[in-house]
Length: 201
Image: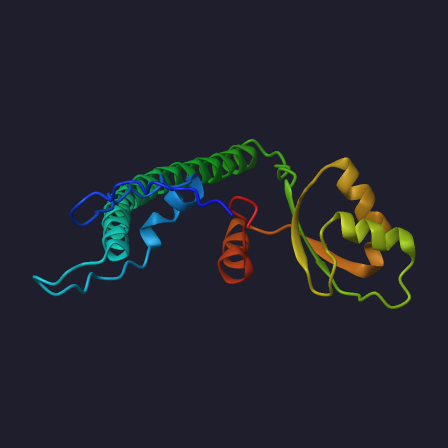
């Protein structure tokens, strides 16, 4: 048999060193959650030889810590802006409610001085509570209750007063109770039992 001479490539002298690559950029979802990062503190003794993988981890942690600091500052700024906006909006609503109440009082006084009758304005809001379960419930009222978001016993919803809603309430009259809430009642209900969805969550 024949032997073939193989030339080995020269090996460079000196220790080889890996250049640590920068961490990949964060995605939008990760950037939104950057304020909640739990970043471990580096625990490397001074003067000790640090492996390359540990160097990569330290570089990644440093980038994450910087991203977290920026996210915390941005979240605090956004929270302050939202609080100011909510205060302004609440103040506007309070002024609007006070003006509407004052107008009603003025109209009542004017009607009384003129010897006339004052017709109270029609309510614009309904609060409906389901009082019957699903036993012996026919399909049509069940579907209407489902459309009005009353799927369980004692579920309550706010509804606008209009012709379609009133027609649907006629179909489910034996299974619900409803009335016209005041501003005080609405506020107490929402603070005690209400919930809302933000970004469909």
